Amino acid sequence: MAKLLIKGEKVMLGKTSASFNSLELNFTYHFTPETKGLVDLFLFVLEADSNLNSQEIVFYNNPQSTGHGISYREKLRETTEEKSYQIELHKISDQVQKLVLGLAVNQQLLTEAEAEAVNYQWSFCEKISRQELFQIKEKVSPQADKSILIGEIYQYKEMWKFNTILHPSHLGLMGLVKSLYGVEI
Image (cartoon, rainbow, N blue to C red; front, side):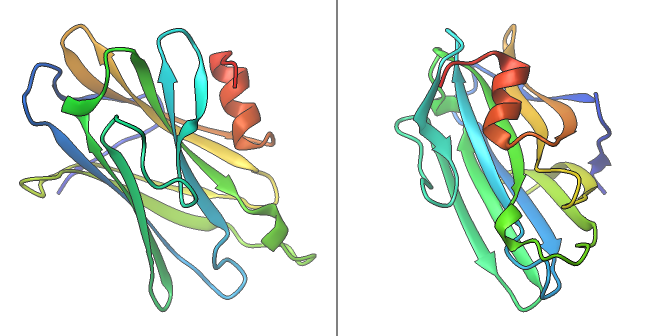
């Protein structure tokens, strides 16, 4: 069983010098008719100069990064929505400071009735061996949270690491990333 991460916890993902270092980040939530399509995922590529290129935000409308080895896909099942990122860490440019993972609530789908909290799970796997490295299990309160910053993948010395942030916000995801990282978009 993989380790269950909590807010503030950091884990090592692998050496930056590895010639092949691939991750698969799987997101799952069970939906009701009221919560179907309620959650959207985003992965922001932050460059070392604190710039955020809008072409490097990887999500359903832009499922591939340009030259950083990051791709996105999703599957809709009968009562489960599955979304995933494939990240080739060995293809990430030295100019990249962080990969920031976020979740946004589709406010247009909220009804006047109080939407229930949505439980979700992240599973981080080593792509080749399919070994699960760790999990995150949380919930989003659609009426209170417009977005949640899940965590960040970053380089520290000669290692790739993941920092569990789990920061909910009433701001939209772009506003949250801008306020926490001071980036220019």
